[in-house]
Structures are given as C-alpha cells and as structure tokens.
Image 1 (cartoon, rainbow, N blue to C red):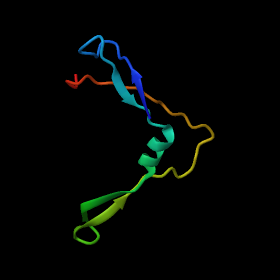
Image 2: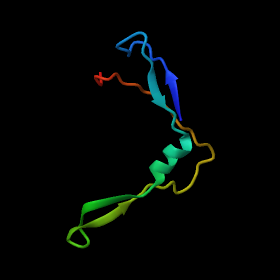
Image 3: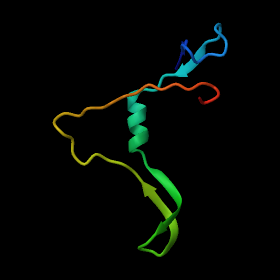
Length: 79
C-alpha cells in the first residue's frame, strides 16, 4: 500500500508528489528477526569458508520495552 505525500524542501517541482511506501512495524520486526544466509563465512572451528545462518533474537523481555522510531527522507540526489 502506498500513500502520496508532499515532502517540503525535497521536491524538484512544486507540483509533483512523492510516493512513499507504508511499512508496518510487524514487517520491520520480522525482517530484523529473520534468518540471513551467509555464503562465504570463514569458520575458525572448521578452518575454511562455509555456509552459515545468522539471526537475532531477544533473550528475555524487560518490564518496559522502549523503541525509538525515526522517519527519514532523501532527495533523488541522495543529499
């Protein structure tokens, strides 16, 4: 799902609209916690390059979980 939003100061033309995707927080969390396959991982235990999986997990939740969410936008020139 996409939402049309006008970003102030980042437009080349005042009449054009920038289309920004809406990404749900659950998708961000699933991407963070998902597995990533690393093809050329050097393992000290094996002594050569091998395939490995990397993932992130939260061992235990604190009584209060605080998240900082930032919104960022870039111009087409990445400035």
